[in-house]
Length: 316
Image (tube, rainbow, N blue to C red; front, side, top):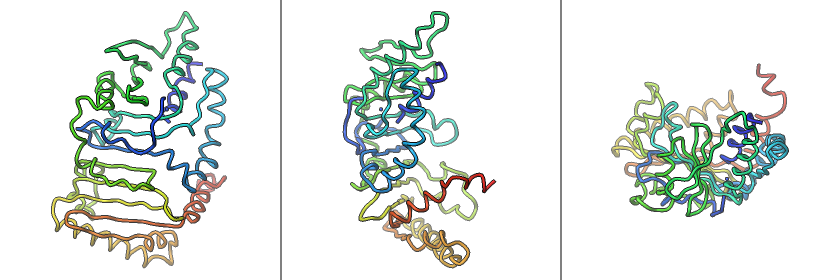
């Protein structure tokens, strides 16, 4: 039974009392350097999202959720999740885990954790890996020394790696002790049709070790990515903030060159050519924007092809 706890926690990183799916920017810590948000409501309303949910997510979670129901007496329905938001301060290596999760769903997560704690605590000879205690008028759930969670008074459930991060995140979620949301993240003009958002308020070269050919990207000091579905098309938009107008122009020219290269190599790679033909790049002052738009059915077909049974085995 103890092996089910990580599974339960993993599935519920996908859950409490509900709010709507769009990102609540005023609930994010003002000094956060990155934020990621999945609007599950919007995703399931899209043709692409519903296909992925039905053909992949539902099927992969069927056995684990059935086992949780049988062994721990909890019923986890991921489709009742409205949104999952993550934010943090570090964007490299294991330090990225020093972040916070905000989960909005139509499931009473504290009640479910109480059920799990009761089940795990039935063995008098072993300490339960799930503990519950009160601090600052907050009921906190602790999974070993690896994660802490609590219901936010403003709604939803908050998870963090340390108790200190959790208490700070609860304050941020309630709007207390939080200055106006971080400018580079809060300035994201979120498309109402977007179901995915990722924003970074940091130098772009902190994200990866850039090759020499892409050193110009070191001039980018912030990035925002959105993805969604609109008018039978799946769209992905990436915007980079640069230090100077000249850097924006250089990055635009670099991306234009890559798009041209993709078109030239179309006879060798049809998928690459399709991506190149669907791409548009533009710059305005210190910002560069790359936009991709492809028919929903084409994207669904490609996802099904990549996940076709036997494909991985054949690749080996």
